[in-house]
Image 1 (cartoon, rainbow, N blue to C red):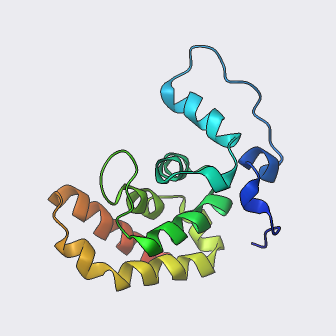
Image 2 (image 1 turned 90 degrees about the horizontal axis):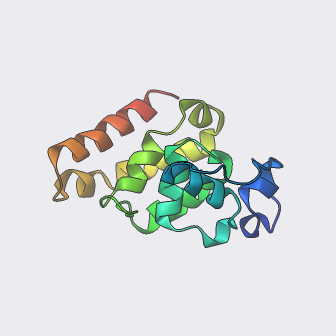
Image 3 (image 1 turned 180 degrees about the vertical axis):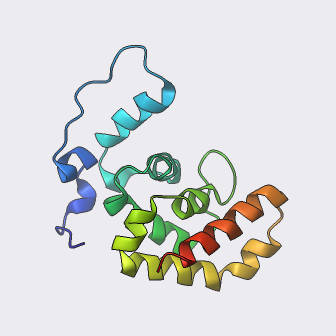
Length: 143
């Protein structure tokens, strides 16, 4: 996907040309947060913001490339849950995105393969490690 030069300074609402309106009253933390994040410039997104939105399969065309940059710096980039939670949500994101965006698919596969020993040796629970490995295998099988 080709982006404008200043796309990171825009919000998902601007980029997707889709205004969800104001936050409904008495909504959950997640719904409230997502509404707020859609109005936040992408340049200001934190790892946690990326984790939340990608985990909900929102704005993937814009957020996955940013997440890949963060994962290049640290494959175990951490939101609010645990080291590697961003990677987990990226690996679990919508398969249709990965089928369409072959360049980004190649990128995440290469990142994971070059960091595989780090993922396998990292001191975490077996459950989290298995989620990473299964996510990588599932993504590999797409293309």
